[in-house]
Image (tube, rainbow, N blue to C red; front, side):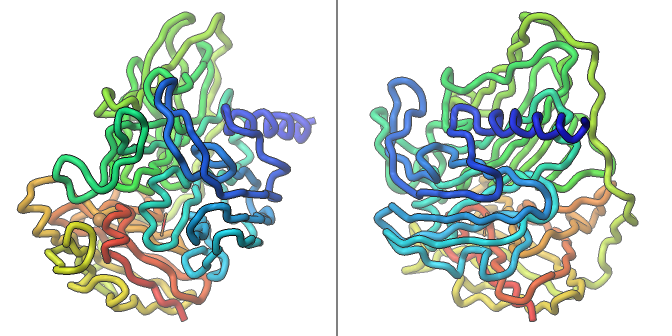
Length: 444
Ligand code: C2O
Ligand code: CU
C-alpha cells in the first residue's frame, strides 16, 4: 500500500520536476541528444541555446539511490563536448572531463547513482564557458524516500544570459567585469513574467531545490511572507535544518529548502533575487482552499562529531590571480599556488585516507578592484566536510562539494577519495576555471 503510494507520488514528482519540459523516460535509462535549439526566454525574447534534449534546463534525470544510470549521449553540436555529473561519486572514467564526444558521436555512460540528493550535470570540455553559458545544464535528482511525502517537489535552476535586445548572444563580458555576467536572469530557462509560479495551498509543505548553474553570478534569494527551512546543502542533509528568509548560492552550489505555506488562499508572494529587474523572480500563488497543516517529513542524518579546526592541515593552497600576459580572457590569469592550469601541481591523495586542505583566497587583484570575488571551489569524485571558514568551525557538520572561499580568508576541508584517478579541483566561476584556477586531486 505504502509502496504503491510512493510509486504514484514518484510519477507525479517526475512530472513536476520536468515542469514544462518533456517527462523523462523510465528513470535511469536516458537518451540525451545534445543539440542547438531556439529557446524562448519570454515572449518576445528568444535566443539560440545549446541543450540536453531540446530544453533549458536540459532533461532532468531522476533516479533512486544506488540505481543504475545508463545515459546514451549523442552530440549534435558543432563542437566536441562531454558531460560531468556534478556532485556524484563515480568511477573516474564516468566523471566526464577526460572524455571527448566528437560532433556526431555517441557515448554511453553507465554508472550507479549513489546517495540521495540534488545534483546536476553540465559539460566539462575546455573551454567550458561557451558551452555551459549557452544553456547546457540540467538537474540530476537522486530521490530520498521522504521526498515523496512533500505536497510538491520543485527544482529551480538559476542562470544568467548576456544578450542584445533581440536575443543574440553577446560575446565577452560587460560592465568592465573580469567575468561574464548576464543582463537577463532565468529560472528554469524563463525570465520575468514567463517564470512559472510556485502554486501552493494553505497548509501544504513544499520542497524546493535550488541549483546555481550560472557561470559566474552568485544568486541571493529572498522570500516574502515566509521563511525557508534549509534542509540540505549540495544534496547533503543537515543535522539541524535552519530557518532563514535568504538563501545564497555561489556558482555550482545547491540548496534544498522547505517552504511551509503558512499564508492564505488567494494571496501572492515571491522569491526574488537581489537583481529582480533582470527577471529572476518566482511568484508564489495560493490556490483556493486549504489543507490541514502538513508536518515536515525531513529526518536528520545520524549525528557526527563536531568539526575541529585542523591545527596543521595536510596541505595548503593559495588561490590568486594576476595579469597573465598572453594567458586567459582579457589577459587575466587565475592561479593556484601561482600557477595556471595545466601547469598547476596536482594534490596528491591516497585512496581511503583522509586528507585535510587549507585553501586561502589571496586574490589581490580582486581586492584592488574592490569587487566580490569569493572563489567557489569544487572537488570531483568525493564530498568534503567543511572544517572551518576563516578558522571558525561551523556549528554543525557541513558536507559540500562546492564551497566559496572568502576573499582574503581561508577554508579548511577534509575528504576521502573513494576511487583512484585524477579528479578535477577548480573554481566554479567558469571564467576562472577556464582561465587557470584548476588542478587535479591525484588519488592513488
Ligand atoms: Cu560542476 Cu568540475 O564541475
Ligand atoms: Cu574563482
